Length: 68
Image (tube, rainbow, N blue to C red; front, side, top):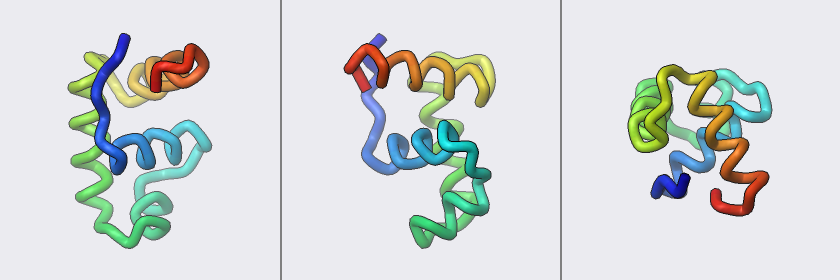
């Protein structure tokens, strides 16, 4: 599974993998919470994930396999 995620989406997914919430990720990257939510939704679509937990799981698998 090689989904093309933008650098911003990768940063957001890494934040989620580290247990941060959207508000924390937004503050860290100096963007709005809505921007983070949009990035999550687009990453979820590109990863063909059913929900955020599934997206985090798929992203983590790709990272472990060196495909992220």
